[in-house]
Image (cartoon, rainbow, N blue to C red; front, top):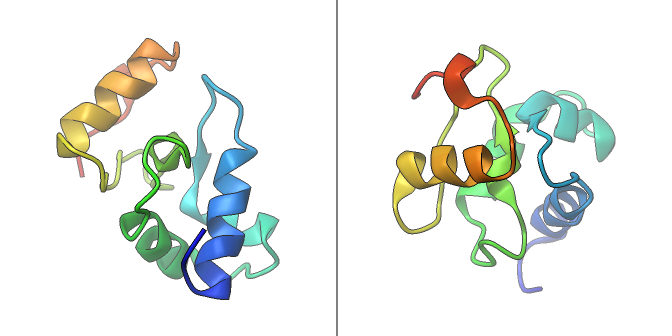
Length: 95
């Protein structure tokens, strides 16, 4: 994967999120050893050129928002992918 060392670390962590589960940007930041870097994790997700192999759609905001989605179709596609994986998206709000 081509990206900065930080992006690669984030993308590797995203690949460990099981299908049908979500994590917050803050949880991913803690997982990769950068607990104060939730915003940087969100930026790495937004820069993800490996959608859907690197499942950035499984990362949401701590406030219950869906966050963004770098893949085709934007946030609505993110909502659809999560729903297809069995995630209850009714509780997640757009942005």
